[in-house]
Image (cartoon, rainbow over all chains, first blue to last red; front, side, top):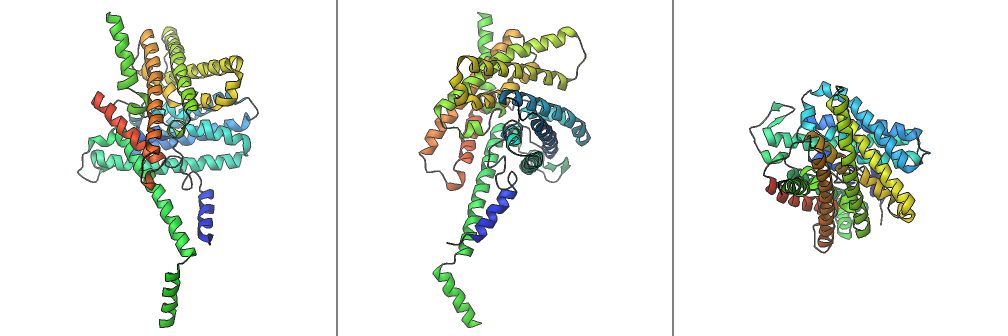
Length: 225
Length: 199
């Protein structure tokens, strides 16, 4: 069996780990609370992405300097650094929208204890160098922002028929802001990603390994030509 | 009697109506979604229960200190100060396990860390601060939030066992079906409250 195309696909997924390969939200199941509850508008999603970017970068930077300390001390210092990152991110978020802090509520300071910082940055920083960890951290931020912005835009559209505050349709579906809707929506997104991966792998296998019927058809086509 | 009823109402509200997982999606991560070992789930939920209770006492202390010192602080700084309670209770739990139960550190060391830096612990502190609860209310709320997390972990573990035996469509196998399951449970809890809780 030839696996050339699927090997290429695997290499692509390895390079884009965190975005497509193992999307941190839809495949790895991390950062879910921030998508399910506060991501009800595109503005909120962008604000969450900015907060995550600062928290992850500060967490990774801190993890590099304290990689030789005990595990429990490292976790504490890394989360403190990422809390500092969240504090810094407030300055940038204010530029997006001043009222967004009310929408995010307790979820903004909670960004400091996000799973990426605690699990990935802390664990990876000990094994890999700063560049590799930073690239991985940034790819997780991009992966998170893709899902957050899609979910946020869809929910905003369903809630008020607008995107980024600009009305585009006359829809009103208040249930879109609820927690259970968030869970169900993310579940369907996750299932779609799994199905898509399976379909792509199947198509690649079929293209690499044509069946006897396909070969016969190709032969006939060549004869007609 | 009145006090007992009030304690019970705060506790039940924290366990059921404002359940960290089903009403606010806090504490939902890979650790809670994919963990299928009973021992790990128990270690995780007991750690969260301990953390929620101890940090609520320390968190109230920090809030009292801020009010007593009469310093003008922004909301974010007050919220960030509460994080010190999480750190202190994590250090306490970790050192307690390391000194008394050394073999548990190798078995559940990581689980304890994941539980400590779980959104549910810090989240329960932030909620009690937002509501400006009194001392005993804060403690009961913390205890209730911890028990709510134990309940959620138990329901998720039961869901794992039931769903493993079902013929689930391929695309939904694994995390998506668990999220659907939690979503349906969240809908039931939403029915109890009747409205979306504020963020």
